[in-house]
Image (cartoon, rainbow, N blue to C red; front, side):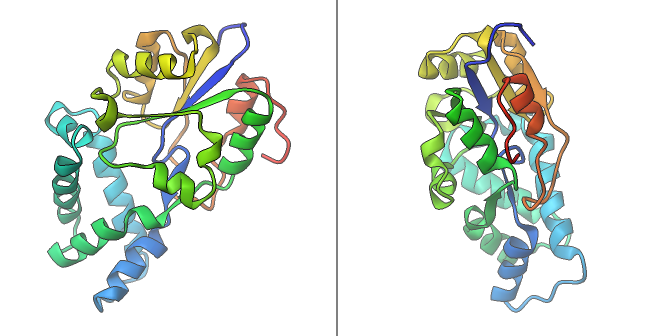
Length: 227
């Protein structure tokens, strides 16, 4: 990391700041159609969904889903229907309710608050085909984010360097004083092509757990407080 102070932190969205509560998402969806789940099945289905999305995140054949909400809807249904134990009916309910079950990790709020209180600008850079702002607003976190750079709105997907350029412009930031934080080595790590150092955090499935953001605050030279 550069010795110059970090003025801006860019975060990925899914499995970085937020994750789906598997019991709430899959469990409620199954219950709504009278489907009985075996022990651990809700977690397994949510985990399989996460892995399928991650595996195809930078696959050229799937890029269109992150550029057009209509393509996104069809593509996500297709992904859900590939998961063992998920039929068309359950896939439809899971798709309809996926946003409601997305929750911030246990240390997300404190981290965003600490960065903001230290004067660090915050951006969210995500490959996504729907408006994730609703998740931030639902949890009272929209006020912490200075700019959302969403692939379907800007026309570029990570790791295309142009998406990082868009983020830098939106936040009036310079690469050497910016940090990218994410979970995907290729997608989020692509920020280095724009001169932005990247911190790739290991996968954490449950939003009830801490995400490891103490490393972000350490690199940004921000007091950790309660994180």
